[in-house]
Length: 521
Image 1: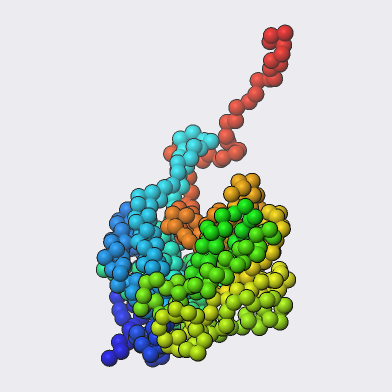
Image 2: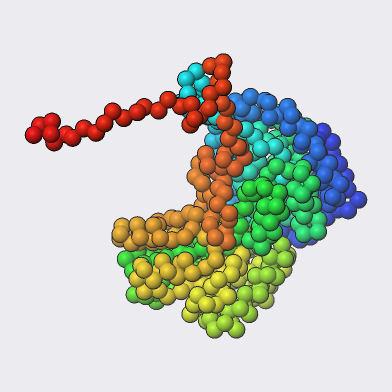
């Protein structure tokens, strides 16, 4: 019998009249569960529950909040394998990647557990006597969070953990592609002792549904912060609503990430990194490589090695084996959008070197594992003769596709790398330290790797982009704390009288100039 799940609002499980299904991405006949579609009223109720819970949660000492986050990390460690298998089942990640996604959340919990004892303010010397100046970090209030389905544990942890640690309460609308993983994740927070209403979970779609309802709560003054991971188009819409309410949102958006291979690079290492950056998670990462920029002298050699490696990729149902590089698309919607890029390439003048659209029983790569017709699988696709004026070069594709672009020297590589409207991640393969320095100094992106892939994040490093990839907010590490707190300055005067800074300040008066040369003349 298929289980029907409910929203988690305050201390209650709440049902909805309308429901949607979550299915195994690799086997669409496997129904995981039915989940409720939150109404606008239910979203509002969740925000009100969070506002009420904020009163006590914000006053809970930060070290105690940190201890609770540590217990979440311990629960994740215990459930790592079962949660990873659920991720694989629901969104089609390989088990290796799913385990890594859970481990990222574990690392995040352990990092921020100790930050509960380091939410430092400052004491500042005053220019007036008998007066103290101090600063404190204060929580913002209620945080609305919307996350994507491609990293259903790691990315939510980047938002949930620091938001809760710093004393905020949360209303979280996870992707409708990964509701089961979200439900399990929130249950682990509850196990750790999180009080009712501090973390509220609502399910549903985006446009015209629960996600949009949550965005409108900013206009109702029920949210004090919004954090979003998803497309740049939706991010701009959220930014507009936040702006008119004087809120500073966290927007982690798309990418069209350049990976440069210079003429002196270790080609074996570069091919390995480029293959993973291009096809890991089936290209369904915001940090996936979008364009590989190849220095002209090694273009042909790299292309030949890369095509050979691409043809040897193991693709298939990740529930069946652990040596698969990537599995199916998360859903039919992503698959359909990905297919459109074949028309872009062909009408734009690019040359397709490898890839045949949807993988099927009649047309499958050698070594494919499982039933290709049970999900939506895409051939790894490689294009060449791609130039910056093409849509194929400029637009995020979000699938197993990569463009090979010819450049000539480091300065040309930097110019072409910056010729997109995104600026999330970037990478360069070179052994020339001057070229590496020039690239990291001039590329317009939030993150850069040298002799490594465009993908990959660690819990104690800042994550985020510039240009169309984000609004300057950062996730992970100590930098994220600035996005979930505000600075409160305290002016404590014990002089017993009104002291006016700048006006009553007893500045030291100079006594006249000293001519040093005359002293020893």
